[in-house]
Image (cartoon, rainbow, N blue to C red; front, side, top):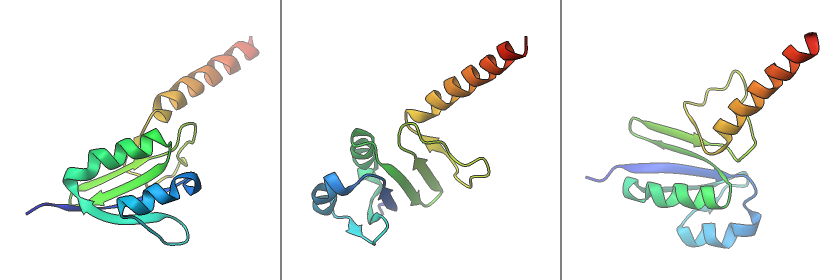
Length: 106
């Protein structure tokens, strides 16, 4: 039996709304939602990365979240994982901020 996952996509989705409909997602007024076989997960993630969209994927023993580039999770966030290019960017920015503060104190 194939595992079914649910995906929620949000962000700047208006330019790709027709593509999201074609994929089989439904608009809830806040985000696009749908249920898919786990075999389609990589295709959906690639789509979101290409258009820099936020997603939350949930399934049995699975929860994955991706924020758009440059967006940071809240410090007390409940998110289990943050995926995407932004994570390395946050680490670099935080390291530079700490280094700049250290230099100012001299």
